[in-house]
Image (tube, rainbow, N blue to C red; front, side, top):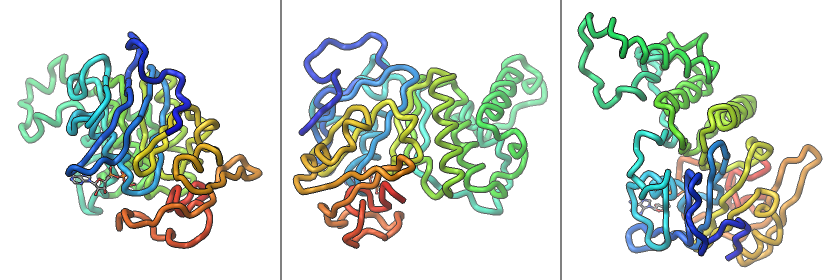
Amino acid sequence: MKNTDTRAAGIPPLPDAVLELRDAAVAVGGRRLWGGVNLTVRPGEFVAVLGPNGVGKSTMIKVLLGTLPAAAGQVRVLGARPGGAGDQIGYLPQRRNFDGSLRIRGVDIVRLGLDGDRWGVPLPFASRLSPRHRAAETRVREVVELVGASSYADRPIGECSGGEQQRLLIAQALVRRPRLLLLDEPLDSLDLPNQAGVAALIHRICRHEDVAVVMVAHDVNPILSYLDRVVYIVAGGAASGPAEEVITSETLTRLYGTPVEVLKAADGRLVVVGGPEAPALHSDRHHSDHGHAHAAAAASPRGFGS
Ligand SMILES: Nc1ncnc2c1ncn2[C@@H]1O[C@H](COP(=O)(O)OP(=O)(O)OP(=O)(O)O)[C@@H](O)[C@H]1O
């Protein structure tokens, strides 16, 4: 297992690290999904978790949230054990579509990120005038503006486009000023211009708000130019480090244990060529262009070149 991250296991904890994984492994239902993951993430860094369907990318998010214990190694999140820093973590789960008839406004969806735990109890009129409530309103408007959603945030969420909904959900995850943002395939189901827009937004949030972002992705290309580091998971193994060191023919061939070629298109996009892994674990949710012998099918069923 290659690990190009220079901050690997065996060195003392970093005081400013948002996230540290040292030789971490995970198992579900007694089956080991991956192991040997070493990763350090600092404030304002943007990290992608890549790999084929079913390999355990979302499961890594569960480990970071503390809902699933690591099977081996060490995991530290914001200096504590996973699950110990809940309020400082923003989480965007895999995409769920809002019903077109849903009348709740986008801005109310964002607001749920602040007080979702108290949702359903209407505030009395006096409370709505309280400084605390006004501060909350200000914060909601601020974060709506940050994600560029001001022009549609007052519309029913069901009437917003996929890209608009995704921006509002990112605002919801940001509204408590988290230090770490965990995003599970936020570009899923978006068209290419929206993928580019949301990727740029996430990068801006990283740098301007000093939030560390860990993002599960299938296609690295929309985010490639923004990434500080990637974790590339395959069945049983993983590599982490800068994208240009990990997404290479040499590293992926070693990880998959079979020849894989990484090509760079004229526009800088990466295409992974090779068919090392049967798509047995692919979920129905994803496109089914795997199973062909063409590029990227194994490394990413939708393809790094998609
Ligand atoms: N609670 C569970 N019990 C048993 N198996 C589970 C559980 N949760 C996930 N799995 C299995 O673990 C594997 C990894 O799932 P995970 O959702 O992390 O993969 P993924 O890489 O995010 O996949 P995708 O790209 O399709 O979203 C899958 O085979 C899944 O069926």
